[in-house]
Length: 374
Length: 258
Image 1 (cartoon, rainbow over the protein chains, first blue to last red):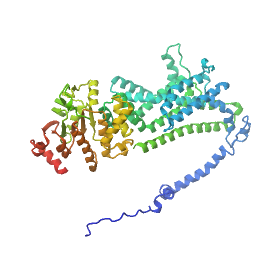
Image 2 (image 1 turned 30 degrees about the vertical axis):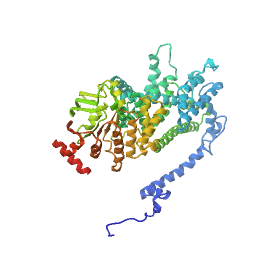
Image 3 (image 1 turned 30 degrees about the horizontal axis):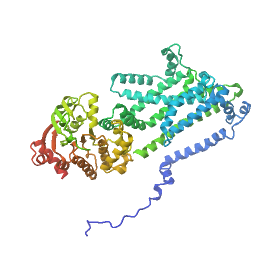
Image 4 (image 1 turned 135 degrees about the vertical axis):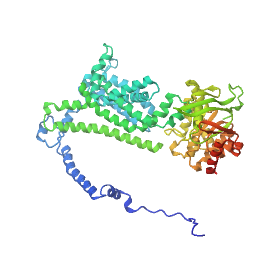
């Protein structure tokens, strides 16, 4: 054998990677301490957190007032949060002016809703189609009967003017999400339709709503909606802002979905058409499942925006959670310098938990999709 | 998949007729006066330089592209703007694409059963059975529950062939089925297509695989500049090309391939 021919007889042994190329230490070195500048920024941030965090923690826990019957204790200890205020106002923050004896109806509605949502969001849950049917068809009817009341079932009527608090915020968010996504999908499909009338109507709707602030939409829904329906049927006071939020969110949803539709390759449409699929099955089975998965982060982003926009419905007279908190803070019994900070800190935590939860769920779904299919 | 040759009560004895077909993309004249009759059970290989209109030609057969002049009759049905006729033709014509175009969010089995269930209204169990049979025929039945992204290119293309066959088409169109495959996977796809041809399927194949053309085709069609330049049985086509453009094309691709 000469030097130009070579045949390997045994596999080359596997070697361990160099010590400082993987692991926590290596990560810290490349990301936190790679240069003098980077090291000083890292140390500065650590110092800031070390200075602020203990104070914040002490304000929220050890120095806080946890129970009191009025604002006197909180007025004395002004260096801690007044959680006693939130505890005392808890029922009002949850239910608004919903009559005390009937509040169990809200609890039951919320519990059933939460169970159904978990069923739907749990990817490998058994019989999700059943869950979807119950949530989208049976549950709204049940919720309406429970919350509004119905003489058939012996439930006293509760006017929506009395509804308020967390319950109204969640209701608005769920109704908004459930209706704005399908409406947005229809608008997005309409915008790409080959029928000029459908396309024009979709474009006009989307561009009009996107070109107007949400508050304007709310005022329009509140004041114009009654003009569009027969005089005998006055749209409910709470229904109007709900319609407004659905319309507003649907326009943004439509643009998000359109992005997904456009990024889908032409080949998918051609393959579906070559197999003889008509428009509806092609859209429902091939196009939308892929397009919606593709833009899921954007859709969830819209959901988060919608959830925060629910705080604006108070402008047209509905009492959402933030409005309930505003009302509670004005209570003279609890007047004090720490009340407002405590109340808004609590509201912030509340909104953060829900929005962060949605963001994490979306990230989880993306990971599952990426693992299973690509 | 028996041949359609045996049917003698057909409305038309030819599988496909192109009569004086013209097509333009804007002002660009892609197809110029194409006339071609494909008999039932006939295997046609279409070749030609890129941009010669060969893909456009077969995409006109199932109306993925529409022609603007002349007429195309597929299995006795003339293609017009009438959606019903287009659907009727698409039900009987299978197509295999260069980029497979499998549905990435569905398993291989679901890819195959989708059209039988939704277009042919076949019960799911029957569709599963049919798909499993056809997947076995293209030798990837063990991959049935995987997603397209988990398969090699050759396996994906065979799955795409099985998906088209699940509609029990009378005619199969292949649009450069091996052009985006790694070289070592070309053979497995060509073998599948050869087996299909031997069973008597009517096929139009756009390809540069001249070995396949020699072995399988009844006629080879050479296109250039949107027109059919030369058409002949494989042996004379390769041994004695008549037109100088054919000679030039063959000399270019044959020295690359062999």
